[in-house]
Every structure is written in C-alpha cells, then in structure tokens.
Image (cartoon, rainbow, N blue to C red; front, side, top):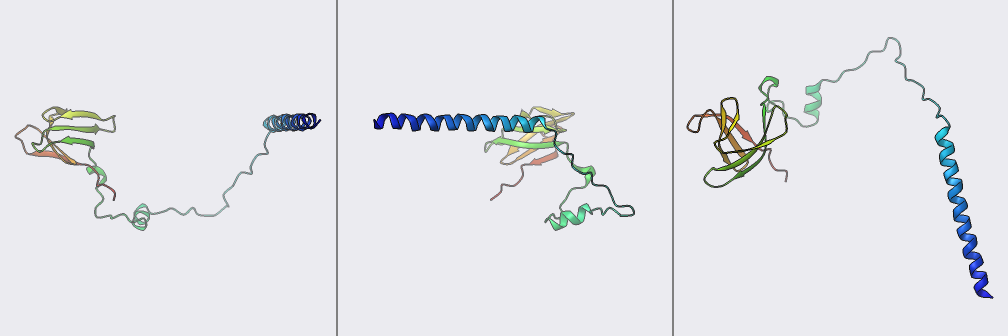
Amino acid sequence: MPMNSQRRWWLRSVTLMVWALAAASAMFWGLKFVPAPGAPAALPIAGSEVATADPTAVARLLGANPAAAPAAGAVSRYKLLGVVADRGHSGAALIAIDGKPPKPYRVGAPVDDGLLLQFVAPRRAVLAAGMDAPASVTLDLPPLKP
C-alpha cells in the first residue's frame, strides 16, 4: 500500500506545478495586454537656468593632461591597430584611414595619396613619400596597460 501513497503525492505535486505554471502564464499575458500607466513628464521650471559643464574642467577632474592633448585640427587621419615587425624593420602594419575598416599593409606598399609604409618597428609604423624620403607620419600603438 505504501507504493500507492507515493504515487498519489507525486501526482499531486506534478499537478500543483502545472497549475502554478498556468497561473504564471495567465498573469504574464494579462499584464502584457494591460497598458502601463504613463510616467509624468518632467517639465522645466520657468526662469531656471540650465548649468553647462566646461569640458576642459571635467577632463582635468577626471585626470586628463590638457597640455598633452592634441589640437582638434591636428588629429591624424591614420590609426595604427597592429604591427608585425622583425629586426630588419620589415613586416606589416594594420592601419585604419579616416575611420574606415583597417587594412594590412606590407613595408613598401602604398597606404594613401603619395604615402607608403616605409618601415615598421615594435609598436610603431612610419609612413613616408618614398623608401628613402624623410618620415611624414609616425604612428604609434597606445601604451600597454599594466
């Protein structure tokens, strides 16, 4: 007879779980179809002034060095994302131009208008007008975080 009692409790617990799932589902769908009350709109107070933050002051507060920041017009079009270099300064560099997807360039390959990849070094790529010309653009990878 104990076997019959165990079956009965098992059947009751499964039935309870099924009904709990049905109730939860009904509650979920019932709340889905009931529109949520709108949040009150925040209106500005008449005559109040909106405070504006000074970007340089905020940057200084967050630890930026304003002397080391480049000027807005001097921002480079080129961004170095990776370098594969050996001791002979040959290899390749992964360079993005004007925010476009980066492309790999081998040493000596043309990169942009009149510039080619002159040589690569660990964490650095140099662009110049020719292989023997002086460097026009030097690109460095950001420093490693300790």
